[in-house]
Length: 299
Image (cartoon, rainbow, N blue to C red; front, side):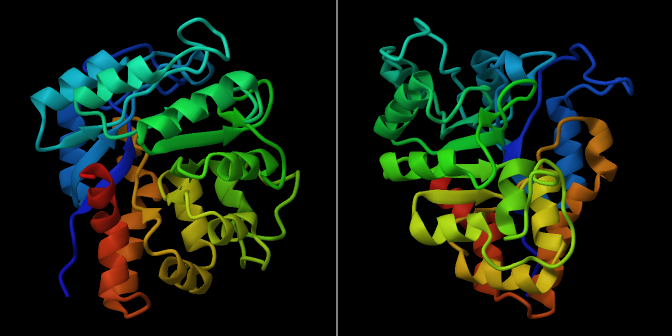
């Protein structure tokens, strides 16, 4: 069976160099740099995610900038729009429908990555979720903790995420981040849920429980968090991929040219090897690598 070129559900870029994000001088990979990286790792197209929330950014990348990049590179990229829940009137009464209608009409295929450091239960967030649900767009979220962090704030056990999945059953949520993926294992704790816990996956992981209980939850496999969740216990991962094959999405979360050597990019070869050695079926491999993404992006 042939290896498949992937669709990347989660990536970042900018049209020009911005302020460095760290002491190493990293900035977002430019579109042509990202294309070259994709050719190295076997990715056909990626979903560009704007950065519009100050909680998560040294240098914001607007919806307009991302839209223009996609218009100039239609064979390489799709895009999600992004809106901060405090935009408009900074009110739980803000009507976000005009935002989403505008971006949908211009090709946006989803919303995200939502990184506002507000609680899942904040009235601003609940209003935002209701409008995303109404739009019919899927939403990629980064889960964090309250204060001095970025991402929608939750606590150990992900109770806020569960309430949101329950209260907005037609809102398709793609879960992402260390605090999401650490919950693949039932032994996650306050000391490690913000990192990359290793070792065998213990029964009772909240990610598994939530996937079984809520069909509107999906999983973004990007970044070190997604790769770690799959690679820490491969035998568990093969069964996980089989059970949830229709709701898992390959991704990278490339943020800089230097990421070409980041272990997170080994997810592609992990999936290739799992298929070639018969650990997962070709049907499961195809869905996770590209089929699920194309279904989502062409709906």
